[in-house]
Length: 95
Image (cartoon, rainbow, N blue to C red):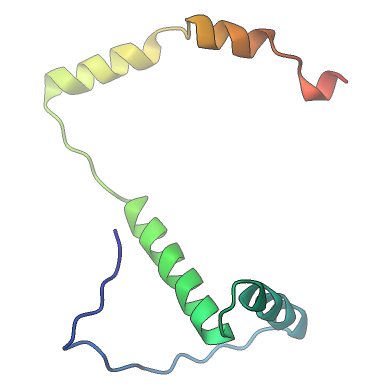
């Protein structure tokens, strides 16, 4: 889901924020690292967060048979070569 600007939607509006100095410094460093202005960096970050928030609320509708199959698959214990390899791998917290 990406916001695309149309030719009839080019008017910009101010958004005022108050942030602590250390947060502003962090934002400025990140913006500079990406070659962006503070405003462009913050707009991009806010837009991405808004899109992700809305996508997280997506509703998926399926028929009853599909839903029942989905639940059946979730109830099955994990198995297969990939799972076995994962379980056999060294655990970093055991080092």
